[in-house]
Image 1 (cartoon, chains in turn green, red, blue):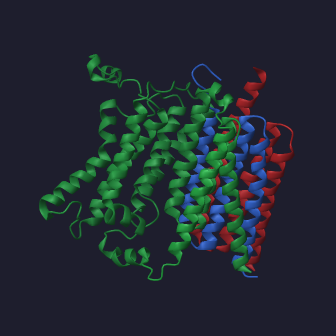
Image 2: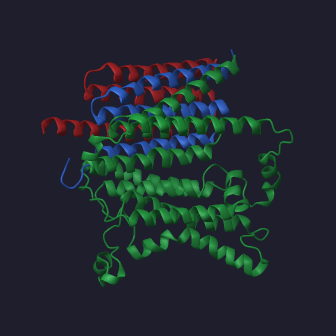
Image 3: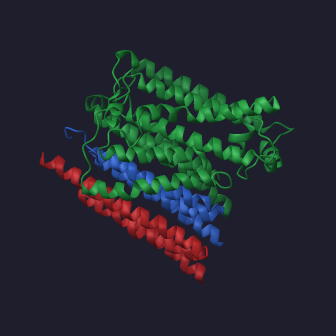
Length: 323
Length: 93
Length: 87
């Protein structure tokens, strides 16, 4: 009885995921697409939970459903003409794209079936569990992200930095929102402190429970976005100079630790015994601040006021005021 | 015995979620649909949390579920009001 | 029928009510109506996560439910905020 019920649950979840995904890309107007995309993100978070992956569910709920939703809804608000028009591929191009997508799906399915048949299976999970006591943390996801594959995480942070630089190169920031009334003000007054507190909790708990730098950073960014929705054009972020420092803080933390370990042990990011836990927490804190600033700046969109380039000779306005 | 009580509370809670869904589909305009939604938020989630708290004993678990429920209550109360205000603004413009 | 089977049936029923709620996202004439259906999916998602926490014995899913509740509030606030010139 139990097995059939789980199967039915999985079938409904997969069917819903496919249906929402199809609806998101095939809707005629952008409003519907955005709503279906947010719903898709929520459903993905539930699917990760069903697959016993709470870290992924946390990240998906925070970034995929929450922050992406804010980003898309702000874009809808700022471009109502584009929202009404929709942007669909039609005719023979659509047929070609459909066929190529189906071919890609068939390829992935074939690859998956092939790998399931491999006789001499090496289970990564067992290897990670064997090495876990040496890693400095007890959460296997954090151990992989910050210790066994720390180099990959360093490069991920570099990708995030490149993304936000690209967003800022597009032009000036989106227009700010009007000041919050009593209703939104009341919501902000308890939601923002709670978001910051939960971010701190997830950062600390990442060592032994689901959590970590990405989830904590996303929650901090959600707090910044809340402040911006309430009328603060800088989203509660500090001065531009400090923002620039925060953006590179994650990569800087990794590089600092890497350079020190290379100097002492001739091996990049090879944490010394007994220091792993502390070093991981240090790097995760820096990464949290970097990820939060990155996501907040991405949601602000474009170059915020006060980031004028140095050649113009103008002192950034925020700094002028704060002198 | 406690288990039976807990599981029936869960099913009652899901009944309120169903009521919210059906209301969302069948009611005529956005205000009444908002009203249906809050039934799911308040009663559905609350009774479901009560049932889950009974099934998993322990005060800490129950307190965590209570916190989640209170958060959802506070958040959905404010956002429902904001959505209704926006809908009214659009109608009168 | 064991206890976890009953909870599983409850989860399945809840998921089906969410599917019906999503029909409003397809139909609803305005953006607000569609977002109402996403709101329902948000609180439904919280309930599903709490049920899965008991089913799979993963207490961390309660944290996920907390985060989902908070972020759903942020997304709903983003829906209703107007620009400087009002919309």
